[in-house]
Amino acid sequence: MSDLSYNQSSRFSDSLERDLMRNALSNGESVSIVSVAKKIAASVKAGFIAFTSYMAELNHALDEARAKDAHFSRSQW
Image 1 (cartoon, rainbow, N blue to C red):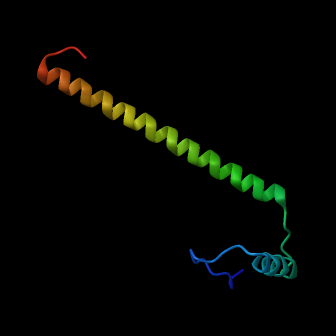
Image 2 (cartoon, helix red, strand yellow):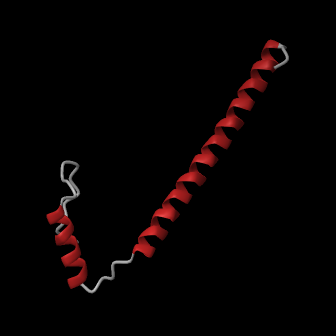
Image 3 (cartoon, rainbow, N blue to C red):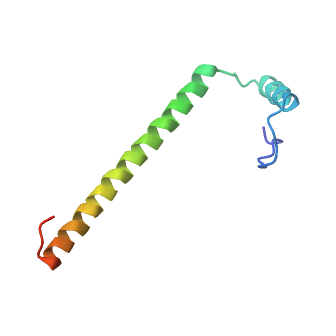
């Protein structure tokens, strides 16, 4: 697959799909939907974990900012 261009303007057309399948089958690579699905699931899981970590850190930072603001303004939050 080294002959595949990663250009933003390139499209995944039928001819490109045929070329990719021909190259994959001629190289002895197996085309498995299960492995692709596992990679997609792992990517979604990693994205979800990163998002939840970000939200937890953001919540913690906001809590600290509120506590500092309440301390300096002597008001209850």
